[in-house]
Image 1: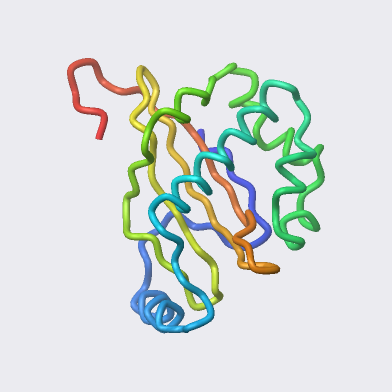
Image 2: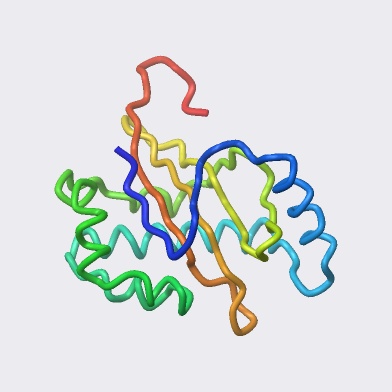
Length: 161
């Protein structure tokens, strides 16, 4: 089951031709640049570790406060707790991701709304951690706008990528 929360639309569906054109237009914008690979990895890991800590403590106020003003306005700590209850109740520990590089399903891009979307997974086993993250540029920083996380079983003997 995919736990998903967002202040706006966070779809996992393929991009339409209009969205692809919008992403190309936004990438050409001089004011918004895609972060470096190290910055992207830091965004992903720090966001998911914050979710991991929230799941362990039951306190979702920090991950809420790490979000953009729109994310904060759309999500109370209680709502985040409800959304991630399944992941929390299973006790899945994300901490091994601190030692791994995320694998992205597609090249990082900034869409026509100025949002940075990062979709991929960490090659953890026996369960793989999948993520879909959306960031909004606010005050000179990329802040969380949407988050989806789940796990899938990795088949024994099959490559994790």
